[in-house]
Length: 114
Image 1 (cartoon, rainbow, N blue to C red):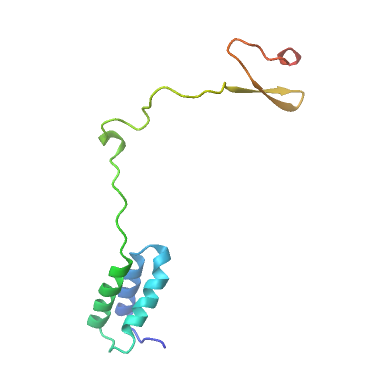
Image 2: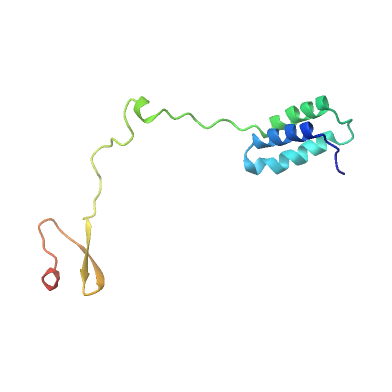
């Protein structure tokens, strides 16, 4: 059943829904409509219903991450690389791409054809 709302009442509900995560907005409106069912519609009734229903959809704030220069040690400073595979080099041979694993100091087998 439609609920008759004035423009300020509708805006109060829309603003309360906008503060929630997008996935919670439709369930919030449905729960608010259920809370207002059978009650006289007024600004105070809508405000109390918004307060009561919005508490059910409250999620904790994400953990605060300090700024890059506010940290004790920047995240980009890491220990030595633990890479165990040799680097892969790509060589273009007459229109095709060939990938070769190359040991340090070794030459490419088909480099003379370039």
